[in-house]
Length: 102
Image (cartoon, rainbow, N blue to C red; front, side, top):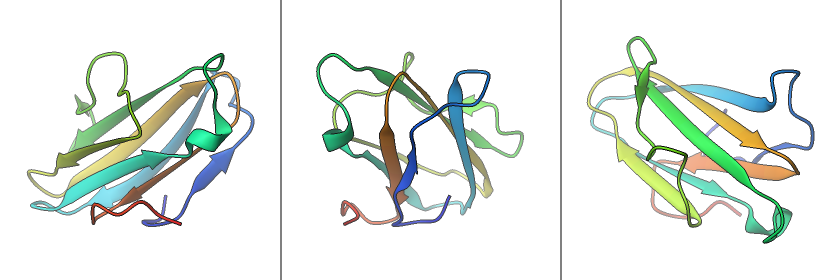
């Protein structure tokens, strides 16, 4: 994944999720956004963000996050892995400023 760019997909892999990754810098806050225009009340998806040197620290609330954004501050350098479990189209992005990408 690249900061300030929308990651769009309309099909999941055979395991039923989309995966994106990037390297995080310690001390930086990361903001995650999704494109609500690609979802509606009948469609659902869960986003899980893992982070850390081993990539196994779940930083999103259990069951994924709700609303239109989520953020966390990286404690140290590490790998961020984003899993999107969904049943319809979605676009997700991350930034290092609290500004939604265009």
